[in-house]
Length: 104
Image (cartoon, rainbow, N blue to C red; front, side, top):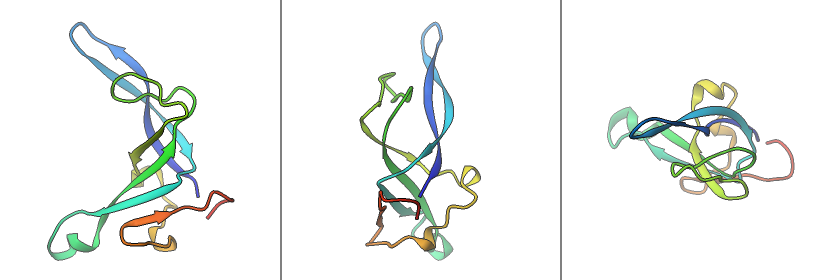
């Protein structure tokens, strides 16, 4: 399984603060975690999804440090992942472990 994640890769330094420029990366997550969008009505059956992966290349964390080789996580943004179908994953509670041996 491959997902497209929006990850910081360049620091934009300002006089008293900084922000980030982000890039879109194709990632093979080792785990996907979901959490409900709410506690009542239809929100109980809708979820936010978070991909856990090992960073590479020029990826940065919020402290401007490289995450190359470091486990990290980012939200799965649906507009960048049109083919992401969580119903095809095997869920144990709110965690889906992803096989590293090929696409799912």
